[in-house]
Length: 157
Image 1 (cartoon, rainbow, N blue to C red):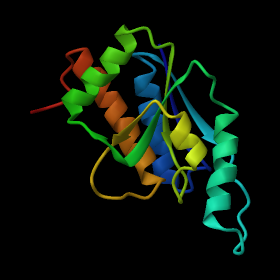
Image 2 (cartoon, rainbow, N blue to C red):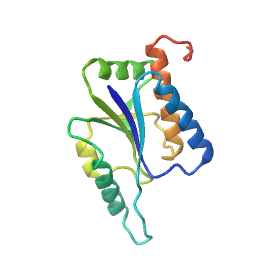
Image 3 (tube, rainbow, N blue to C red):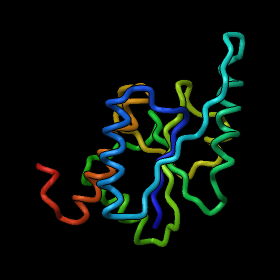
């Protein structure tokens, strides 16, 4: 299985970029993994949020194939413990999923097109987080999931 983390727009903080790069390197020890930054659109003050989401959605869909399994990181998604999330990843891997993509939306969330295309939603918390720090938090959870799957001593209970 190939695993990808997609998000819209560059990460603006150096400390986030460094942390994301570190977890990307660690995850690649377990699975074929890529992080894809989808180019964000130019937003004017007069552009309605619905238009921004629509254009971002169009950009995102250009990078997703029909056979890809797309999972949104969304506040309305299913909540998992770290162990449950590891089981979720392991299940996807063992059931023949060829390409699993996790998608973090932009500042305004997802367009209706993206919601229609999705194969599922995962939530990291009932709280709302900025779309940039969640990139690092989720990368860490992916790494944690693989250490749990492999029985390595990273996750403590």
